[in-house]
Length: 71
Image (tube, rainbow, N blue to C red; front, top):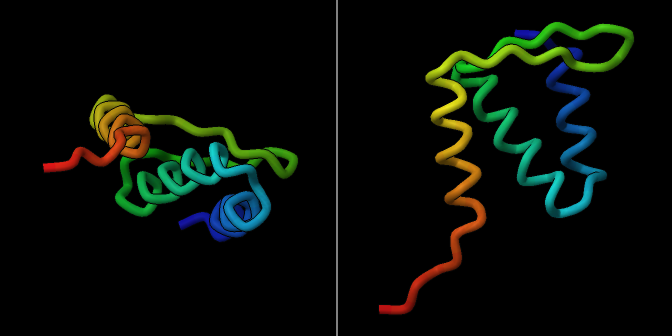
């Protein structure tokens, strides 16, 4: 695992807007699951995502925007 990326994204989560935080949490989750790969270049992440990673990402983002439904 790329510790530089983990520190970078955890810092963004700690200091970002609510919308950015959800996005960054999703990226970190996908990274930890091995569905994206990251290289750091001059302090910025370069992210590659597999098809499976993209499908999972879209599902997680959709769920994060879904409002709870009352029964």
